[in-house]
Image 1 (cartoon, rainbow, N blue to C red):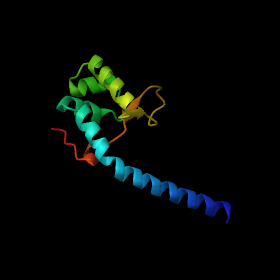
Image 2 (cartoon, rainbow, N blue to C red):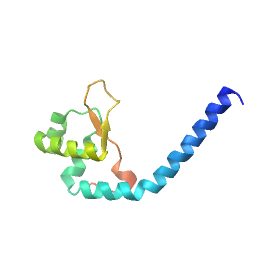
Image 3 (cartoon, helix red, strand yellow):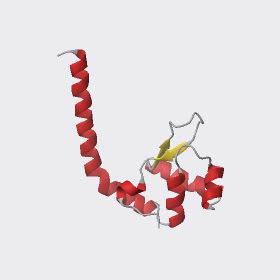
Image 4 (tube, rainbow, N blue to C red):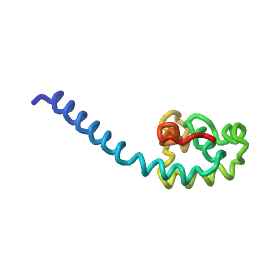
Length: 108
């Protein structure tokens, strides 16, 4: 087996594992999202965490004060609902780990 074939086999195996994890974890992720994002404002703020917007921009758009956004974000980070963003070079910028629509969660 060549190195290229081996890498392709490893990649295929990892994709299969990822698929299984997604299928089996979807109900748990949905439940956590529903429990933590228990208001329209929380869902709105969470959805705005795109890794590009600043907290001030999110405050302006959502009408939620920075203190609440910070508190919510800390909790969501501890739960794994938001992650460090790779979309910008700004250290500490975070983004949502899950798109609500993919889990059947509506904004309203």
